[in-house]
Image 1 (spheres, rainbow, N blue to C red):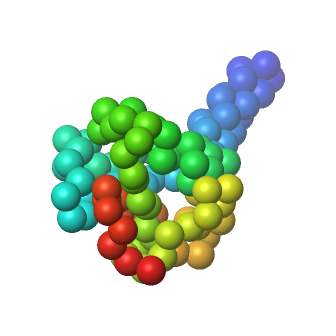
Image 2 (image 1 turned 60 degrees about the vertical axis):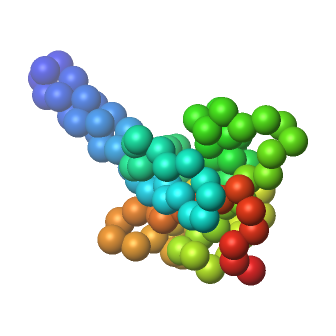
Length: 107
């Protein structure tokens, strides 16, 4: 009986952990440096601002450097927008595509 509960709990935990993260694809645009790793798993509750900060560290940008993020080459989401909201509305093939650049590219 105890073994059944443990297995069910472990399975539920794994399923829950997988559902709490989504796949994002970071694509360079314009003069932005290309990342070695383009696919990332992020927590759904992360905001655009936190992804921007993460990307700034990866690209080793100075605080004075600009960085723009766009969803599906269409629009720049607000910094307080969550990945879950963007994913629910704009995911493509099960992942959210974010384009980044150092100069303004779209809308």
